[in-house]
Image (tube, rainbow, N blue to C red; front, top):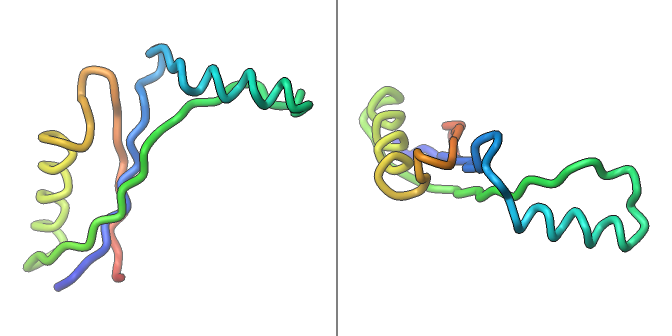
Length: 83
């Protein structure tokens, strides 16, 4: 079966996010005073083939653990569904 994985990677809570801070300051300068914080992350959309949902989940977790996320400073979540 062919599935679409949408993977969201972001910095763990407590990890400094300089890019998010720069965006926050820019939004403040543009007059968006209601913004309280900005955290930046990454989103991946991956089409993959697997025999079943369990195998697809194992593939996605391995991709995240080996390449897409740095487990020391980042966390991830994913959704699997039909394309």
